[in-house]
Image 1 (cartoon, rainbow over the protein chains, first blue to last red):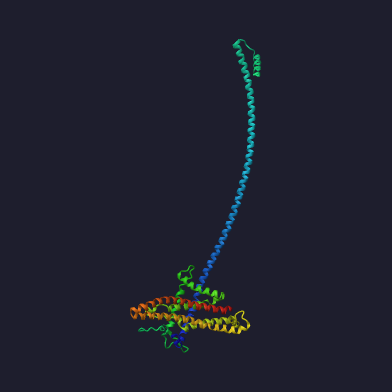
Image 2: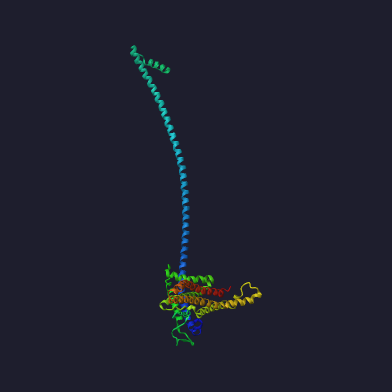
Length: 164
Length: 259
């Protein structure tokens, strides 16, 4: 086994070169390059953590804004409902008033029309008497050739109308 | 070779340059094949890490791979030690990546084109040094942070008074054995796997040389088995690197947080 057979003649050289090489590795790579690589990893981890925190904050803010938006929407909806309710009540009251006014107007018109009707009827009745008197005078004159006094004719017509 | 394949040859250390005159305090520090593959490990690791340095917010494939490795060790340190473990992440990461890449480089099938990969972590010297470094850091941190209170590590909570000396000895023994188990585990796992692969490869080649009949009953099953063992070895490469890093982090946790 050369590892043991040669140990006396080669240990110094192996130790010497091992210490040189391992020293170079330790100071040149372990102490110089490793921290830079580790620093890169650390910076990346920190960046990811920061970005995640930022995203979390943004999410919280979005939630906040959404909640505010919802509150405002609910508020607006109740306000709109209330306004609609008020408008309905007001329009109902208005309609009632207007219906009443229209009713009164119609009643007045009906009364007026009735009165006019009565007048017209009376006038018409009076007209009929006169016509009847003239007709009676005329009939009498044609049949008997005698002239009847208007007063007599009127009296006769009146009595007949009263009876008939 | 001539029909004889030595499965231990792959562990042989061969100096490449500076055999004679490169010396440090009287010790020869020649640049060997072991040193070469250590440097290649460093280069591979550096290239790999370089691909993850873009620092893009949305990473590409390579950056994801690099961040996967760094994140794996960072998370492991955080889970096992807590926030105080951050200071030791560079060390455990270097350890994990060095062992992993050295293991995997040793598995490269470059022998086909004549370049024989050397598995740095299959040498007791290397794994032993890594274990001793880890263990030293644990000791230094433990005594630095807790002083002599660090010895309370060896007395678990709720130990009955008469049992304390015995428990203390047992715990101390299990503590002192840690660097050995840490170093030997990796060394033995890598060595055993590579010997097994080399023995099977020897069967394949010797069977092929012995004629079609022998090739059919020896080489073919050995080759099929080699494919499976190779996959298993790659798993072992990753697991051993993970175990080394994990145990180091657990020992560091003992030193930092006591119990």
